[in-house]
Image 1 (cartoon, helix red, strand yellow):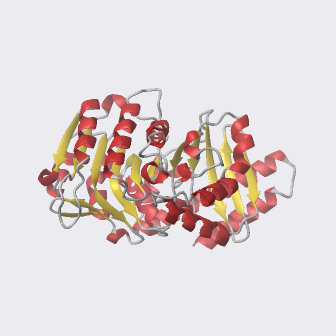
Image 2 (cartoon, rainbow, N blue to C red):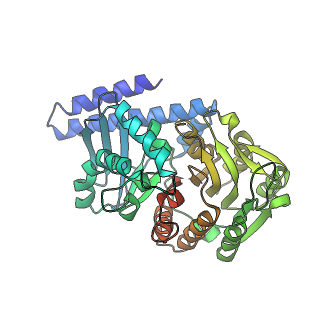
Length: 395
């Protein structure tokens, strides 16, 4: 499936490089972007083994006009080169980087393996190399157009790394830009957050169950949400699948925050969230959150803290973004790996505090929360703050 879409995109990008006619170049770049978008939809459809993704896509409108401070970047990995297709407020731009897909993937794998190690800075050369390939070529345009939010539509292995921790030799990427990831612009609901109706259901485990360790700081995480927003709680033995279903069916929630152990893997059937009485599969979670599909107001935000994806598991990250999308949630905040319980609670609490400000987007709220930990003497290492990813709608 992938070769077909990528061959078409490749031909269009090569044709665009053979002419100086502005309209022709723009037309080819748009067609190349559309081919990649079509592939992203097909990929998610294949992951979930149903047609629901097309139904979601048909309801959404495309971001044809980005806000003045936002750029969307499509890194497209071809065998012999990396193409960076960038959608700016001024239009589309394309930059070719001479690095092979194999070389780039090896660097990505090394970075992901090392950035999780809290006691070393071995990740740094890889963070800088990836920055040089993925971000530095874009810097002149980003600077010229005063871009402050970067939305990445990642491909393959790029879905498995925290782009916030890429490094320019002086500072991390999150120090310069608010960041978000989306499986595709045509799969993203472009409406901003409706704060007026944001009532939360929080669910989580603080005690050890089913052989998994306790998460004591989940209590403070949930408490901070309760102080900031209207919310209901399902903690420990109250966090059971049947109870969660009842609350979602009967309550009018705009946000669902689940703080528990979880795993996303290549096989959607092997992905789950831990509840007090069992494991909540992605299929069950989809059915529960899917209740929002039939409402006028969908779920604004799904937060999954204390989860992890397999290292080197490119398709697992589809589960992260895809389950929210498929279930009708506009945005998801989730982690690439299981991080320190206290650090996670601090970051999540700051994210929700920032989100109270109507002038702050979800992407900026996460950026500020990550910067708070980055500037902390104890939690400054990216292992603590970088695994948090904002997916789909960033507004």
